[in-house]
Image 1 (tube, rainbow, N blue to C red):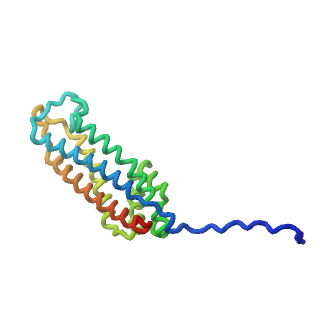
Image 2: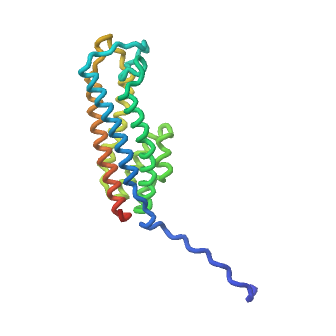
Image 3: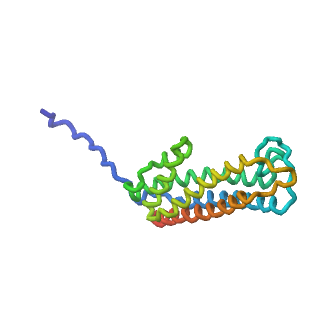
Length: 217
């Protein structure tokens, strides 16, 4: 029999589901990432144009591989540094944006955003998983944010294609001295990179605007 003089135990407060008040605006992270990404793409394009119109530089590396930006033979140029640093610098705010967007998506529509925020970011660093889960995570973010999936498909196709094209360019044989101008394949790669950047901007900003509107920004 319970002691009638024993004070009632304090009931644990109920765990409330996340609400729209828990949403966090991803706009600053999106803009930071896209600006740095854009600077990198512009630097790459300018470098490509210079190589197209300037006299070709001889290969001094003897590496047997196509040194697209003459990194091995002549060292990094200012454009190379700008492209490299801006490109790498865009990764951190992008991953932070994706984590925040995935967390927001789970609040907006848990059934649509099935990939956790941690896996949405961590999957990029897991071999083979990185070919599937990042796209699935972005698709869930887009669905929860009421953004069409066509942009996700274009975004993922663009980035995967750019990575594969970069590998192909890196393995191309070194051209004879005096003829190291961009090939037709490299011209196509630059166009592909610019289109991928445009698609990425549109997708990230559509998701960002949708989520920002819901958190009262």
